[in-house]
Amino acid sequence: MLRRPTRLPLVGYVYPRQAPSGVSLIEILVVIAIIGILAAVVVPAVMSRPDEARVVAAKQDIANIGQALELYRLDNYSYPTESQGLQALLAPPTIAPLAPNWKPGGYLRRSPTDPWGRPYVYRIAPDGGSYEILSYGVDGQPGGTGFAADISSKGL
Image (spheres, rainbow, N blue to C red):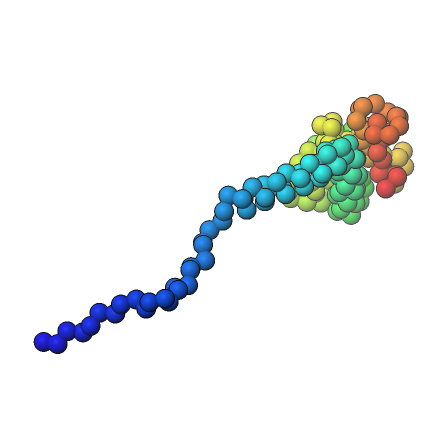
C-alpha cells in the first residue's frame, strides 16, 4: 500500500490571521458614552415641556369631541342638550330630546377627560345652534393665564 505523504507547513510562510469576531469592551463603552451624552442633552429639553404637551393634547381632544358632536347633530338633527352633556356621545340619551338615530357603538370610545384628569365642560347656545367645549387648564378654574388659561373650542 502506498501512503500519501503528509503535508508539512511551508517554511517561512505567514498564515493570514482571522479578523476577530464580536464587539470589544471599548466599543461598547464608546456606544454607552454616546447614548449618555445624547440623553443628557435631549431629556432636559423634552422634560421641561409637559405642560405644553398637555395643552396640545387638550386641543386635540376638543377637536375630536367637536367632530363627534357634528356627527351626532347630523344623525339626530341637533346637538345634545347641556343636561345630556357629552355622555350623549357615549350612550343614548335617556332624557328628552331623545336621539332617534343614535349610532350603535356611540360617537366616542371613552368618557372625555382633559389631560389633567377633569371632565371637559360642555355648553350649548340657547338657540341650540352652536356649542363650546372647555378645559380650564392646569388649575381647573375658569380664566387664568399661561398654562392655567382656559382652552376652548371657540379658539381652535
